[in-house]
Length: 395
Image 1 (cartoon, one colour):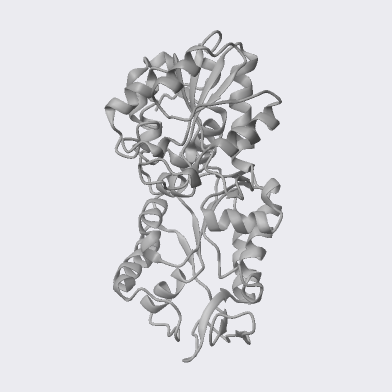
Image 2 (image 1 turned 135 degrees about the vertical axis):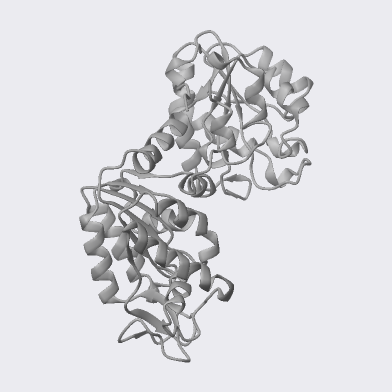
C-alpha cells in the first residue's frame, strides 16, 4: 500500500487538516496526562515550521453524538498552547460558521483546534456530508491518529475522499506505527517471537490464526492459557476458562504443530483461592492447578522458559500480560517478560493497552523499539486486517 508521508505533502502555505488522537484523561477540567498530546507535536511542529497552518481535530470520550461539556476539548487547547508556546485557537463547534470563520482566517504558523468530533452524530457513521464539511476547512489532509485508524469514521476515512491523492497522507506518528508493524509482519528478522496474553482466547483468535503463518515461536500467558491447557486435558482448577473455545484451542495447537511453530504454554502457575491483595499465593508443582485454586500468573519455571525463548528472538511482538499484573502478588511473570524483552537485542514491538500499561509501570517503555499508541488498531493489524483509516490514504 502506497501511503504518502508528511514530508511528501504540499504543506507550505497550506492549511492542513490534522486528525490526531487527543483522547486524553481529564481531571477537574484539566488534562491529567498529556502523553497523547505530546505524541502529536512532531507532526504539528513540522507543518508550522514549513509555513503551513493546522486545523486540528480529535475525539474525546464517548459523548454519543451530541455536545456534552464533560467531553469538551477546551482543556486540550489550553495544554497544547503551553506545549507549543503559542495561542491555540479553539472552535466551539466542529463544523459550522465558527469553525469555517476561524479556519479561513488562519495564518501560517497558527493552530486551530475543533471541538470534539463525536459531538457530531455523523462522525461515527462516516457520514459523507460531515466528511465534506470537515474537508472544506483545509487544503491538505494528514491522518496522525493511529489509535482510531481501525474505525471508518468521517474524520478518519470519509474525509480523505475529498482530497486528491497527492494532498492526503500520514503524519509522523502514524508512519512510525506502520513502519514498526511492517518490520514484524512483512519482513521480520528471525526467529520471530510472539508473546500473547490477556483474559480471553476469543479476543486473540484472529491474531493467533494470522501469526501462526508468520512466526517461529509463540508464548501464551494470562487467563487465555487455561483454555489451551484444558484443550490438552490438563486440569486448571477454578481458573477462568472459555468452555466454548476449548475445541478451537485444540485446533490451534494442532495447527502450530503442522506449521512448525514452537507453541509454549505455562508449565507452572502462581495460584490462589481468590484474587486479593491478601491472598496466599501457591506455586503449582506442574501445569495442573488443584481444585479450589485459580491461576493468576505464570510460575517461576515458566518464566525461565519464556525468558529463554525471548532471548532467542530477533524480532519480538508482545500483546497482552502474563497475569493479573495490577496486583503485586501476581505481577512477577508480566514484569519478568517485560524486562527480558527490554534487555533483548531484538527489534521489539509492544501493542495492546494492558501490555503497554505493564511496560510503562515497569519503567521500560524507552527500552522497547516501539510501543504502539493504538490498542485496537494494533490488534487488528496483527489479525491481518486492512485498517480503514490507512486504506483511505492509499494513492
